[in-house]
Length: 551
Length: 77
Image (cartoon, rainbow over all chains, first blue to last red; front, side):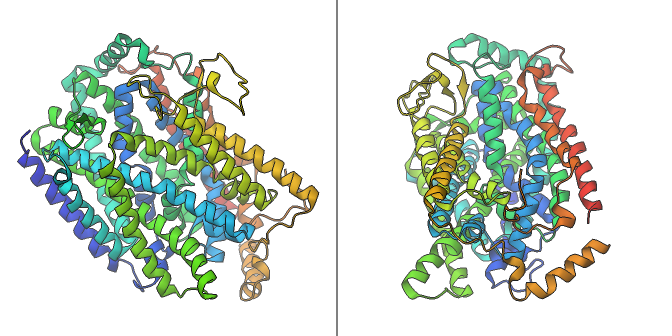
């Protein structure tokens, strides 16, 4: 395969501009670039830019690569990403305002900080922090897999470790500007990302149907493909067995979205609750993008696009479906812009994810260990250094994940990430509304949910490749086993196992809570309740509230 | 439902974060969870089967609901 020079030059040019913006970002709207809140949360001063940032975090390589290839391979089931992004903002609106408010008051940087404050339990905090990091790592790997798919589609498709060199170069730039500028870098880059992605999708929606005979024939081509292979269970409409899966996947994805550390980081960086409320309206402007990107998977079927064979693994890389569609259907200069858009699209989430994981590490794991060893709190400067180094380590681990395992598995890892992060819902989102659960009940529920959820995922076979394990997100209800009992034996209806694990998590947490209350095991202290009695706030708070009430 | 003995939720200010009937509007877009509403091909629109174009309609529905609550929470300040 030859290198496509025109595309490569346009891609490199845009990539260089974006990297330069990332380095410049350190000085943008910054008062004290050395402080950790400045690096990890942009000084909590983001206004309109947070719309670009949060939008740029939510629409990741999953939207640009994995989703269209899911539609390409399985049909209607992939479309769940559109309706879920239509109801997730209304659903998250009020809980996010609460979390933002308490985090601002108490100086929390992460969801695990909130859990520590709310339950006073080191075990639970560590569990939430580790779950957050564990869910983030494979998600970063997925971004890098997307970036590499673009590079390979442009002809940089070398074998072995050498074949990864273009990715290493891109990765070094990403790591360097993140280390230097912190959250401001992805925030500024997100503006370029939004402009480019919109430009590309509008062009695609106009050009592709015109070239492929209109949307009706695109859907007809997809229908013909799925009808030809009925055993794979795909189709352009939902069948009898996957409607429940469609619904449970939507619910699971919606509940998980704002639990992801990187998305919360973007929300906590907002400067006022008004900014968050406004974002919840305007973020819906990104939602059509998801639906249209998903439909590009069908356009790829109609255009007879074939994914390229990854020279490093010797197998077709499903992430390359969309890059190859662009190369086949667009004039070469615009294909370059399109590839740059989705390539740059992966940088924003990858950067924020590494920052969010670094925040979790420095503020919830490192400082705990430091306190045990040295019997005092680490200084801010120490935490700061830890954060920056941790962001590098996290990204290196993600590269290792990508290089040493088949990128085909990056999707499986993403699936696991969703199930893992969902298990923190009771400790974080539900705890915003009620302090009823006992801290050890939540620990027990989380562990039970994680164990059961992961074992269910592991047990799912892949129907199209014949692999025995980790074959996707669809569990047949008939195979559902509660300690050997099959409540739905014989049913072929499919569900998303993450949601089942979450229900188990809640049941275990509730039962353990009731038992511990009956025995009288002491619960942790809730410092968020005493916020008003704290020195400093006690004098200002009532006055502020009076003023608010009178206007 | 929370009773008075329950601890107050964190960071709560009655003026802004208190619950209102209007907040129920935020649950409307959950209609997307009822797949029989839209799991059909006909009638198609501009070549899109109903399954696809109908789900795009949940976006304006979401916008209307969030805007309504946005204005309402603004009033409560």
